Image (cartoon, rainbow, N blue to C red):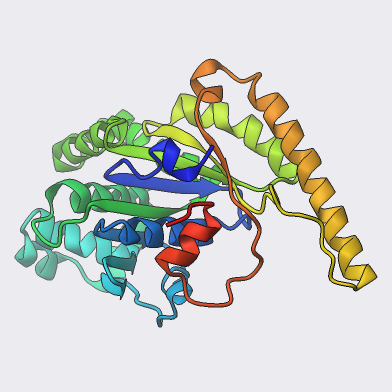
Length: 300
């Protein structure tokens, strides 16, 4: 299936996840560049120890500050402590409360002490950015999510908070966040994988769990580094050509196994789109809408 045929960006919030090391950050960057190239005001969000999205566009790390990295495209690397401060001062409008009670040391201790607190603050920030922020308003927010196991834990955080029956503003806002995530018209998940036997097996085992436990709905699967449609190398270097041939054959066999087992999954999963994007190797230049479209298999 072609990328544009899958309504791949037809949401307010798209969450991208997959096994670690399969290129989900590069895919997030490509989705962001492609969306901005369509004229949609797009924000890419990550919560990582170091910025990974801005450098894809030839920019320095941006940290916890929404920063334009290309026409119509911005990114931010959320910081848990800053998220908490903004929740108290901007969302609840209690700057004096924050300044009086909390210090940086207290905030860090508070965040680290309560299980799931950092995660629900992050989900709350995504909800606020998509639904409540007065400016800037974005047509699409892309979250470069955690690796699959951590991501599923993130998705189940609202239920974990609600089962504590704490009451008060935290419970009220958690209910609002969960309702937003469950809205299939606004929120969806793209799962990124690669055509490798172990990744295929883990993906097919994981997706039913994600479908069952996550409030946000799975939109489909993006197969990165598929080698689909690429011809064998004829570089004139026997070792290079053999490497390319072997890798292409292995990827083709893994994809065949994936499609076979994919059709055996429940209809609500197997009916979703699967998009294979080619392996172009390392990105030798900053991401652009044209490069993203080529990588995603679209012509502009």
